[in-house]
Length: 264
Image 1 (cartoon, rainbow, N blue to C red):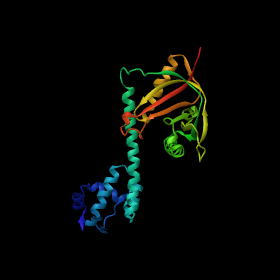
Image 2 (cartoon, rainbow, N blue to C red):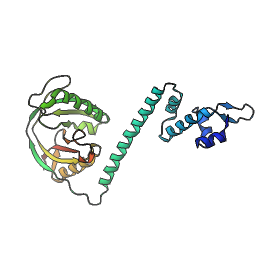
Image 3 (cartoon, one colour):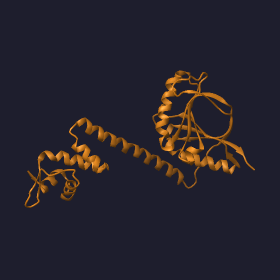
Image 4 (cartoon, rainbow, N blue to C red):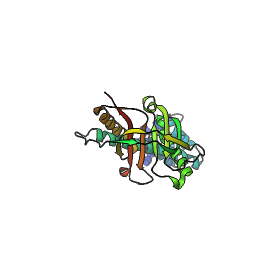
């Protein structure tokens, strides 16, 4: 048996940390002396203590740490850890996107965006549409695009695009539509033909990851106001270059089109 001091040196965890792990039910000593209260540990507990320490460094909640270290099945343990690592990677992606947006917003003299007014004719496309919560758009988009690509196949005549109702931004939930242009839209599963109405669009292009698109939205909105225009209808996006076309996010390009009309 190892005293708590010896175990501390071998695991490089402080005595205070080991006591805290014991009190939290994460790592019980092999033996606790009933008279002195001294804690003693087994050599076999060293890897477990180190695993707990690494999990806590990754901010895994105490309850989940308990599930991981107390689960006898190695496959289940690996799955629990993998789930948390995926959440950390998602959080890291959001942090990186926020940093990019902040750097762009805090530039002392940002370069003005290029905006084009374009008359977009009505056209019929293959589409999937639904009412979706703002936080669920990413997952919904991935499933809808996969279904569209399977249905349309090589008959697509251009890049995918989307249409996003104002309620999605204003109320956190609204109608979204994802489409692929094709000469003969099929009807299968959720895929069906939709006619996008003609519109006058104020168009600009967002460069980089879509998570930072709100900065471009703000700049386009400011341009619309400065030019005495108002928005009339769902925002449109066209995904000119994305993860399928380029592995480097810096090369991604999203065209944003706001249906507008002049006021005053």
